[in-house]
Amino acid sequence: MDTGPEFLSCDWGTSSFRLKWIRDGKVLREIRESDGSRALYDRAISLGDSSEHGRARVYSEFLLENLKRWAEPGQASFHRIPLVISGMASSTVGWRELPYAPIPFQLDGSQLSYERLDWDKPFWLDDTYLISGVASATDMMRGEEIEAIGVMANPKLDPWRDNCVLVLPGTHSKHLVIRDNSIIDFHTYMTGELFHVLAHHSLLRATVDTTGVNDPPDDEALAEFLQGVNWVAAHGLPASLFRARTRGVLDHLPAMKNALFLSGVLIGAEFSDIASANARVVIGGSGRLAQFYSAAFGHIARGSVEWMELDSEELDHSVITGQLLFLKNRAKSLA
Picture 1 (cartoon, helix red, strand yellow):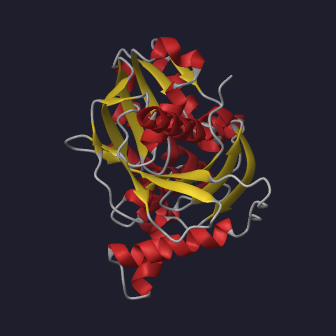
Picture 2 (cartoon, helix red, strand yellow; picture 1 turned 45 degrees about the horizontal axis):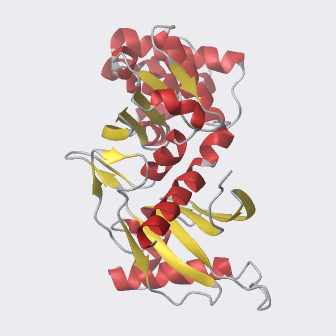
């Protein structure tokens, strides 16, 4: 199997930084930090220069500090390896803002918008590629396009590339409409952010407790969650949110149960459209969030829609696969 070139894979999110050393398609080393693009942009502001030049200095210094955590290759067997960066580093708060690639967007990686960065990199590092995102007339994403390329390259999804909706849960969940191996449309749902705002900065905070929100859900937790899914299906989103308060005040239910109910309301509302769209659905994600999304969609669809849940390992590797396809396409263009 062709596993592609050795390279460094960087996934730079809004609130996270992940750097992996890839050889033969496997992760040799990995660094995870919480200094995402938002933190680095704030650092540039604190230093008095949030211009592209100022942001580039902050980003490059942070990246260099992390690369120095890995020993430099010995000169005897030295060969330079490329670095591919995707995610928010190409945004207005990133290293350098790049234009979005338009839709329809082919999932073979051939339409990715990117630039080669010129920076004071270590001697053992080859070209550094900064990959941009994808935009429609009304929506945009950075990072999820690489995930989508990697996810849909999975051989078991061969029959699904002609017609499906790919759901990528997160703070800003994405629903990607895929036809003929291309993304033809997509929609962003601020589900995760809404949950945080409502649970911590609204009237609901008095009856909602998010303690243990990242713990794996047991059967009782899923049952409370699905009550929220059912409630929003019957009453709609605006009329369902206040129920998270009345459950606490009138029904005297524990605040942790109300947090599960609120999560079910928001995720159930997110799925209200695609459950009846007559398209196959692929659900990505990892951990507790993936379990909730799969539980919600399975409950709503009730066997009427063909769908598939990807395991966390498949999703975690999707960024690497997408970046590998980018490098292979670039190698072909230079051949």
